[in-house]
Amino acid sequence: MEKKIILLMGRKLGMTQLQEASGRLVAATAIEVEPCPIVCLRTEEENGYRAVQVAAQERKVTGLTAAEVGHCAHRQCKPHARLRELRVRDLEPYRAGEVFSLEDLSVGDLVDVAGTSKGHGFQGVMKRHGFAGGPASHGSMFHRRGGSYGQREEPGRIYPGRKMPGHMGVRRRTVQNLAVVRILPEQHLLFLRGSVAGANGGWVTVRSAKKGS
Image 1 (spheres, rainbow, N blue to C red):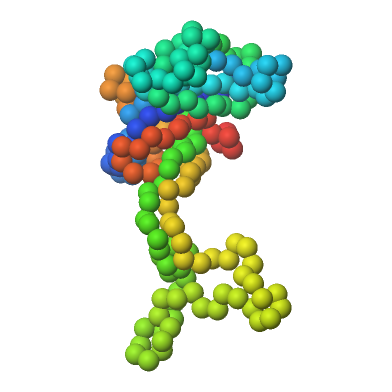
Image 2: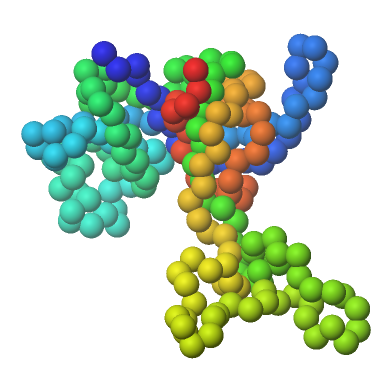
């Protein structure tokens, strides 16, 4: 039987520092985690794949679309604003109606946290890709540009994937193997060692580490 995987959703509150038993201060990210019920199970026979659908942020029935109302009625669950699916190999450890919470984690566990990175608008190659740029002296005529992008007549185009100026940020980023430093179940607070992608107040997904032991 596959080891049970925990999937939680919550809001990133910001960063702080916590003191370990040895007296060392560590940087930690505080996440407000809500209880996340399992809404339904995706089976191979019905859906073509195996997954666990987890919900968070309970909402009112008013304002729901017909499809959302039908989904809640069919699954006999309350409406939620956020749904995530967790692909699994074995559905045996999971039950519809089961609730994931902070009680499923322990201090020292490793987790993977996925969030949406901050948006930085349209940026040049120096900020977006870390290019060194040209000389800063007068008369160089080459300061913060990316240099030569194309070729000559052959092939006469820019290869796909060339690092150029463009939109920066607002991408899904996952930080792996973050250790759980502290858990406060009464306040629904989870503290993880290190930083997490996203702005304060943004939603993140916390799951059991894929590569951690």
